[in-house]
Every structure is written in structure tokens, then in C-alpha cells.
Image (tube, rainbow, N blue to C red; front, side):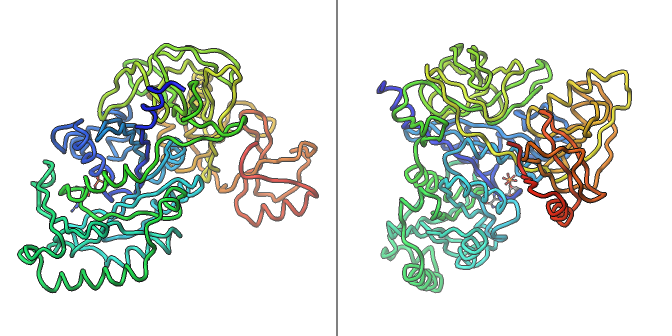
Length: 530
Ligand code: GDP
């Protein structure tokens, strides 16, 4: 295998940052970029106050509500590593997109607010990470504020998320009494100094725990507490085990304060050592290992249209899994069965898009999509093509009937709603035997209804009316011999078909699902389409 390509891939670290909104993900990301030399001063990336969410500027909804609805990718170099951060929208309504983004990552950094512990959204995202057994690193943030007890925080992670923890460092106090962190390995204390709200890289002072100078920074009581805590932790906690970390069974934990830029570089350094270079991925031809497979291969994990109003474009984001990518190269689109030219490749850089000439296994690129790609599709230059394992879809839990206000605009309506469905944010269904006049839309989070309405109006000039429907459960019918029309169930269920004509039923509650299964012998229902 080409040595240079292999070395480039070895340098890649591709990870996602997950957290509950407001835990400090954006602030932490920004500090990473500061160390990567991408920005010179913190506060310039995407402060909510300045609404500099340029990557997603295309959507006014974001600005109006001050939330981030799209995931973006940031790339930078640090210490001989080439880092790709997959930023994920924190708002719960956008979990579908976030889930898919996690499929493109090799590891995850979980940011937790030290005063709150594990929160709802962290729990959800964490589940997706464990589905893939990717390594999970914990950064407990906001130590400059009053925090929960350290043991309680660790217990919370272990109990709520079911993963063992191994604190790499240990906090000394919190809030006004925050003095720094103790490195358990080096037996050193990294002292905390406020760094003008973290806008600069800050002062770094480390002292051995045995150094008498430490007494001029940390009070006797606090030192005694630290010693007691460490003794307790050494005796009871799990030791560090790289294999368990790699399998996602043990999460190394770090403490710090992203805002004041404390503990961030320490975290980054350790994290980069403990996380892995791009991992092998499963395909229908077996495992594809980026360290062995010479040919280029990638899979699409996200499609986004109209990111830039000036150019009505549609971009397919893909994760490169092996080999080298060169702008304008040809590759086989496996699902389409055709060779395609990969043109206008771009990468997201903080607030701007830039063209890329080359990229390697581990990188994320966006490719111009003439409307042929779907989520989960594989592209490769390998002669004997193969397809990467699909990306799981998540069952919609909210449904609404959509009607267009001006029936003269039918074509536009159908085109718009179909395209938006292809991007994967919504799923659309038709009444069994019905046409496209009325469409039923299913979403994972209800904010997607607003996004749908907004986009149809702004991008396709179609006004719609949405009527909420009472269904919460979706089940496809797996048996081919069962006819939807003759299916007997409960009066409140709804029979529909998906875009591919596959029959399914929407249910109001689980009781109704059970009854329907009982009434139709041999009926096989599943939450996901095959
Ligand atoms: P996100 O929603 O997870 O991206 O959170 P942000 O990074 O936007 O942070 C949410 C709020 O918490 C902002 O007002 C930040 O300034 C603040 N914040 C972030 N990190 C820290 C920290 O370490 N200490 C304190 N005191 N505030 C923080």
C-alpha cells in the first residue's frame, strides 16, 4: 500500500462531540480550534450572541430560535494529527441528523455540565454511540462553577449510561474554590488560573504533589480532601485499560472549564493518544480496513440541499473510509450502478466552505449531488465494488397530514416534499390507494414540521397546511402474502404506503399493535423498512 497515503490516514482522528444543549460543546470546540491555530482568538467561531452560524446561515429558523439545526464538520491540525470534528446539533428535535453524524465518527467526546451530571439528550446520543461500540471520552465542564461531588458525577455516568469510568485527572474544588486538577498518572497538580475568559491559551503551571510550593496555591484542607479522594478512587475505581476504552466499555474522564480554557489542552493531548486512527468498517464484502485497502471508498451519511441560497445546490456529505480522494476523480456509485465524477468537493472550515483538492480515509467531504445519492450509499474506485453497511433509520414518532394551499402548484409541492424526504429529515407516506394530493409526514422531532413548512415556502414557493395526527408508532408489514386492505386491526389505526410502495400501518398506541398482531395470524411487523 502507498506509504504516503497510509501515513496520512494514520494521522486522522475523526470524532463527534455530544452533549445536552448548553453543556459547553460549542465553547470546547472553539478552544480546540484555538489550539489548532485555526482561530487566533476565541469568540470568533460561532457565538450564539453574534449568530455566526455561517455554515447553516441558509436557514432563518436557526437564527430565530438560536439553535443549530445542521451538523457541520471542522478540520484542523494539531501535534501531527489531522483532526476532523463532527459537530452535532444539540437540539433534541434534530436527533435523526445527529444519529447519522455519529455513524461517520470513530469516537465521541461527551461534554457534561459538572453541576448537572448526565442529562436527557446526552443519554439518547450516548445510546447511539454504544450501538457501534465506539470509544467515548468524557469532559466534565464548568468546574469554575459550583459542581456536583466528583464521586457522584462518576456514579451518575456509570449508573445512567452503564459505562465504567476512569478519571484521568481529579478536580480540586469547584466554583470559587476551584484550584485545578490532579493528574493521577503523573502525580502532578495543574493549577487553575483565570485566563481572561479563556480567550488566550493561558498560563500553565504544574507542580508535583510533593512540592512544598503547592501550599501557597492550595489550602491544607483541600489538599487533605484531595488525598482522601484519590485514595478512595485508587482503591475502588476501575484502572485504565486501553482495550476497554477502544471497545467503548470504559470512558476516560477529564475535568476542566472550557470557558476559562482550563484543562482543554490536557484533555486534547491525552484524548488524541487514546483514540484511534480510522477504523475498519463492515461491508457486504467483509471488513474494509483503511490500513490495507488501497482504493478509495466512502459512504454518504448526510444530504443537504440549498445550503447556500445563492446557488441552489445539494451536497452529499460522505465519510471517506479508505484510500485517497482527489478532486474530480471518478468513482462507482454502487447503489446507482454508475460511474460518477466527484466534483466540487468541499470541506467546512469553521464558518466557511473551502474547496479540497485531496482528502484521505477518515476525512469528511461534501460533494455536489445532482440528485442521485441517498443516505447510506457507497462510492468506491475498487473494481469489484462493495457496499458499506447501511445507516439505521430511526422510527418517526410524530405524524401530520400535509395539504398544499394552492392546488395549482402540485408539481412544485411533490418535487419539494420528495426532495426533502430524500435528505432524510422527514419520511413521507401516502394513504393506501391514495395519490400525492395528500401526504402524511412522519418525523423524529416535531421541529422538523416547521423546517418542512419553512423550506417548502422559501425554496419551492409552496404554502402548506399541516394537520397533526394522533399516531406515535410505525410498523412495516414484513409478510409479502399479507394484503394491506384485508388486514384487520383497530379502528384508530391507519394503513399507508411509503415512497417505495411498501405497506405499513400507523398506530396510536402499543395496545393497538398487539391487538392487530393477534387478529392477523402470522403477521410480522417491524419498526424499520427492509
Ligand atoms: P452548547 O449548547 O453545548 O454548545 O454550549 P455552549 O458552548 O454554547 O455554552 C453554553 C453556555 O455555557 C454559554 O453561555 C457558555 O459561555 C457557558 N459555558 C461554556 N463552558 C463554560 C465553562 O467552562 N464555565 C462556565 N462558567 N460557563 C461555560
